[in-house]
Image 1: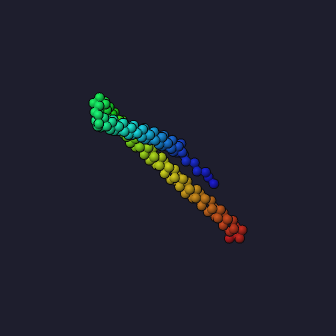
Image 2: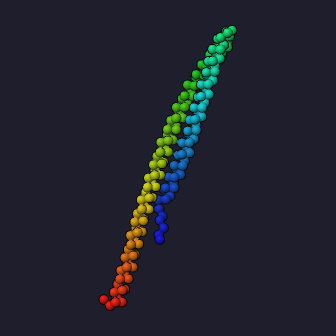
Length: 152
C-alpha cells in the first residue's frame, strides 16, 4: 500500500509552532494583566486603610497632624490608583491584541489541517481507484486466460 505524504506538512508544522507561540504570548500578557489588577487591589486596600485611619484620628482626641498625614496619603494613593488604571488599560489592550493574534494563528492552522484532510481524502480515493483498476485487470486477465483454455 502506498504511503500518504502531505507535501505541505512543513507549512502545517510552522503554523502549529506559530500557534504555540501565540498561546504563550497570550498567557504572558494575561499574567501581566493579572499582576496589574493585583497591584490595583493592593492600592485600593492601602487607600481605604489611610481613609479609615483618618476617620479614627478624628474621633476622640483629635490629632490634626495625623488626620492631615492620612488624608495626604489617601490623595497620593488616589493618584497611584489613577496611574494603575492606565496600566491596566494598557495591559488589557495587550491581552486583546494577543487574543486576536492567537485566533488568527488558530484559523491558519485549522485551514492547513483541513487542506491536509482533503489531500488525504483525495489520496484515499486515488488509491481506491488504483486498486479497483488492478482488480479489474486481474479479473480481465483471469477471464481471458480461462477463455483461451476452454477454447472459446
